[in-house]
Length: 312
Image (cartoon, rainbow, N blue to C red; front, side, top):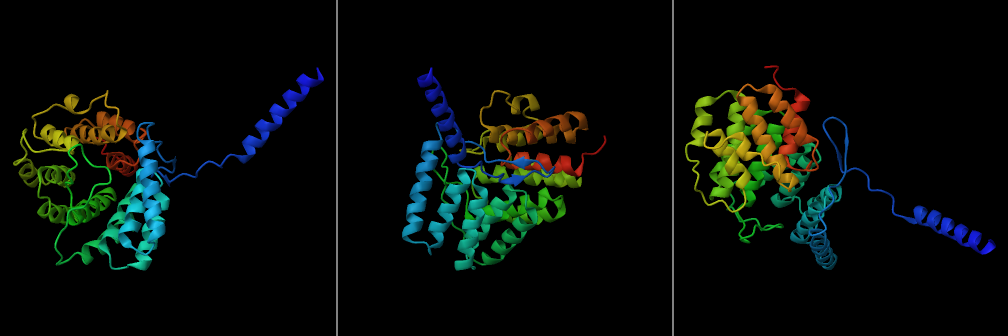
């Protein structure tokens, strides 16, 4: 009996020590616009090994050259892909202290300020970035999470204008978002960037009741376009154009929470535009309560619900 009791006590002590030596839980990365804590999404078991390896490689490169802006940017991006948004923001802030005239640092920090719902900080960063690129040639932005064709589709300038317009949209400054989306459209030189920009520009015109202009946005949208990655935006535009129904766009079997948020926000807007406010609210609530809270569709649904939808 003494031996059994001793083993039991040892097991209990081991469990107690393990509980007290485990790393404390990570704090929330953000709070929703309703005040709820938002914790870093857990990567899938298939994704995590590569994301961890990419971060380790970025950290090693940074350790060898901590004053280089490009290594700082890649470290911030790799942290962001793992949901470590606060560390990413601090990494970009370190870069800005070292290289305060680099628009790329403001572009990436502005993006992550959108993620954590700090829209005013995002707007300040992205306006700074837009001023720094004035009169400069554009450049392709390398992908951290490449599409299956391994072909980057966005540029530095398109990303700056896109995220600035989005940050203004999320604050309800639809009139202020329009000129930024129009600037983005000037540098959206392939179909992927065109549909991404056109989708948000269309939604912004709809919010302002500028029906003649929103109809023009849809004119060049075709069923056959060279879409390598922005399929959800393309399908949303086809829905707005009447070529797809909402039930064809929102796939209940979609496993990617980002795609669910993207598709869901578009479908919710379709119901909103067609006067079905209850259905729109139901979909926005479903989107905002999903696991894809860093997705722009989720943030936008949250912002719409926080401001309040029209009663009818």
